[in-house]
Image 1 (spheres, rainbow, N blue to C red):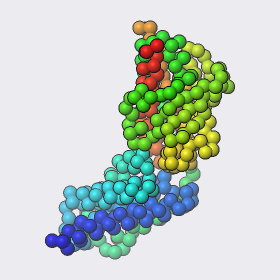
Image 2 (cartoon, rainbow, N blue to C red):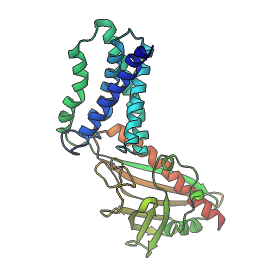
Image 3 (tube, helix red, strand yellow):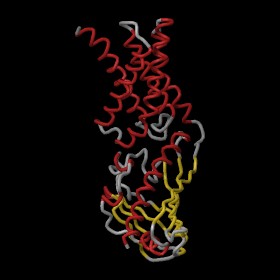
Image 4 (cartoon, rainbow, N blue to C red):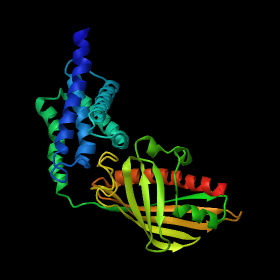
Length: 319
């Protein structure tokens, strides 16, 4: 029984784990080189091959079913994700962002490997082809031109206070208490919470300094000021203003893959005497993962917007 358990369960998962960790370390050695972490070769092809290798190992000893193939691939992938988190190779926010695509790719790879093994008893060359696939595609993808994508995210919330009152809450945002932000998924998975925003001056050219947890600090330079209708700004993120341990390098604002460009607040009077407050942010996705990066960027910003607008609503309605 022990031998059966070891050969059927432990070794397939261990092979998947070691293969995944080898590629994670290899792809992370030279960012921007032939092998890049934020690439299709790593984020799609690597989990696909990992799931396939785990199933090939499991199927060597005993014929497997489609359900068993999917289970082995999923377990191998979960073990790999856990290992990256425990060894601090990736932070929680990155693990959560890649989890859906990693799991789907791994299960598909495992199911294909199981099907191939049942149909033709996969040879060593077949297994090697799956194992080498990310290493072959990585350099090819690195030669492709950057696929930058600009996205605009806007979120609107009704506030039971006149625009003048709401506008005055936007400039200086002092001493934000954790409870004022309410629940936000992005903070749950590791995005630091804002602490305060200090406005230095008024009108176009003024600077609002935003401070977050983990010593994160950046500036918002006012480009348009029209009380009580609009306050727009462009982001200025000086070097070193976001400590390395505050945000994972793969999702760092102003980093190699994603950055925020500009944004602002627009206020419109509502029929009931209140205000329709809209927060807009424009961001740049500089990774090769255009669709997936755009999707997650929009989801994260929408969630963050709702948290900030909720803060503004609570404060304005208490004046």
